[in-house]
Image (cartoon, rainbow, N blue to C red):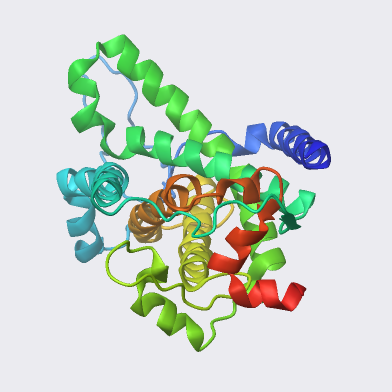
Length: 320
């Protein structure tokens, strides 16, 4: 555990040092979407009788592109967007609470054995928490930016609302960098253990054996079960879309972003946010509440032997 803390501290300190070096570039810049050709109007000098002798109509050097009406139509539905973003967090939380109240959690059939098995390295734990903590901050600040005007501002005074928006905007951009680092490391480090297998379909057929009704059945699972694999590949796909769309909007001049591209990236970012947030809630509940003995995996790096037998039997057999 001490080694994991050292790794995490090293990564976080390095990240914030690099972030500070990029602070000027990452600050908000005016978004000038089209070049303006400046022309001097002949004769436009204050005169006694006041009218320019040769008035001219000034036009942009290039006309702006036609707006993509389909994308603008989706973005215009701000009430719907705010509802979906908030529902992806709070509605999924509510549904999970209802499920646990009705079904209960998945307990170990034979209790804790007291024998521990190494499951995650200190580096893996550090990388996980680096990405996870940043992801939580991004979700919370994203709630403010996406729907705060509808759900938070009405109950706040103008000064408090302005401060909250300013803090959320700055923190959202700052947390993007540890999230990106964690995302890249997790994808490359964990992908080999997330390859789908034929027995994963049977895992989904019985919902992983988490239902406490009827005859108890624990489906086969390797190092990662089918649910964890699904979460990993959803995270890989939509997390990547979040990274690409976010960087594009943060640095429009660097990526030569047009107005249509910016609008499209914003829509992609919103859709990815909704999906990632919903899956994150499920992931957190499964790790902390639903699976007895599961949380120790990402705190100490070890799991109980009976937990491994019950939830990852094929992986446990490989160890033996």
